[in-house]
Amino acid sequence: MPSPPPPPPPAPPSDGDAAADPDAAAEARRQQLDEANLGVVSEELFVSFEAAAETPGLPHPADVAEPASLAATPPPQCTYPLLDALPSNLVSSGALSSLQLQFVGLACQRHLTVMPTDPPTRAGFFLGDG
Image (cartoon, rainbow, N blue to C red):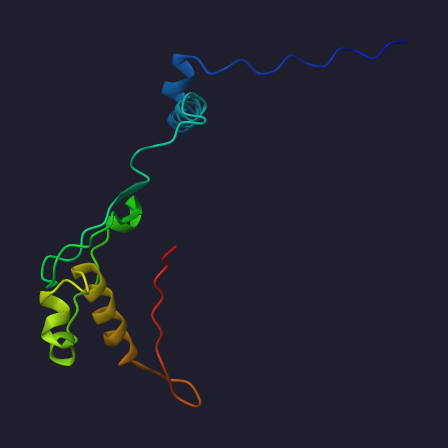
């Protein structure tokens, strides 16, 4: 004797069902958007990177991008007296751009932090460049 056919798949939610279960309606809408955007690359994944306004120096000569999600977070304020430690011609000549000066200053500032380890070690700084 043949086995009975499988039950039919559930019907997609109708507008009446959406009012009854707003979470299901939101999930259905999210799935529709996901399917509609499958394979589409957003232009907002990366944005042009600009050095902090208070950073001295000339603009960086190359285009630099950062993830849009990271750009939404302001960088920490740099309080390290970097310009006191560098020859002034490095800044005025553009040998180091404002972007490079910003990251060198933040790295120096971070290295001032001593971690509570045994033996004590200095904090590190990571720049994901590449």
